[in-house]
Length: 130
Image 1 (cartoon, rainbow, N blue to C red):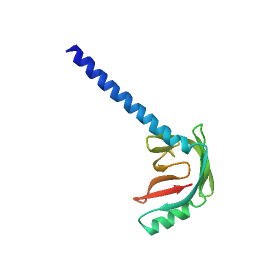
Image 2 (spheres, rainbow, N blue to C red):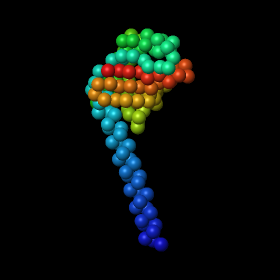
Image 3 (cartoon, rainbow, N blue to C red):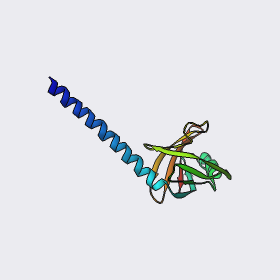
Image 4 (cartoon, rainbow, N blue to C red):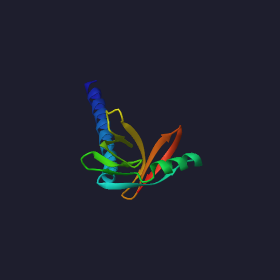
């Protein structure tokens, strides 16, 4: 009986450790290309032309720089923005704990492209940065 409990404890512990290691690896694989890179808005992608047009105009000229020290700065709507950032799984969290906190889904990231999924007026929109 004690051997079964010990064995089950080992299996459960191994599973938890493997999951945490996988989560940290996934987070690091997103943080590495995101940090120390200037990201400039390229386009919005949406199923609806009106939403796409509106967001292309709204995000035009927006850009961000995410430092390796979890700080970001940039321009949005031609105004300077700055704050903190972190990655949690596939989520980019800006200004965690602040009233302006935002969670943005990361759809794709590489050294050349950053695609973020946001919801605007009930529609899912992909914002593409390079």
